[in-house]
Image (cartoon, rainbow, N blue to C red; front, top):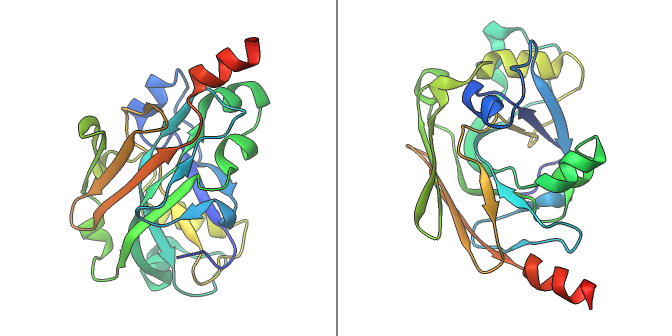
Length: 217
């Protein structure tokens, strides 16, 4: 599933995640774009970029827009949502810190796994309290719930559509709960969202330690 035009992602939408990153909770939604070229499907490899030494997983609930919309009032948000899926907002954490903005750190090819499918039967009430769990090589990493979001899905869609037109197939990533951390080539990351499905992707590329050693020779 490749979005028609864009992925809009939300940062620090869980207070505990903001705290673990040493950041304040934003007063309004903190949004950024990921290119549609970052999208891959379930089972496809996340490619570890040579420029990074710290690539992290971020399990998230994602929603898919179903119609062209702009300036959507909160009360009408259900009318513009096509369905929901699982996302991994892969992040080169070291580049995020050094670049001063997030385009490269969040935008590499393969840095937005989505899937395994889009569910269309849930309403806002059903997705407002779903467990989100991430494992790395089968070991638990994240264990959160969408009820812990700071800004709700209606608030996010209303805010985002106030500044950009949303198109059918556009994807909104709603933020990640605490427990984010690094992953390495050779590992497998899985994100499960209650009632939606499990998204699993292997990580491939050059081991950061090996790349570092080679660079020093």
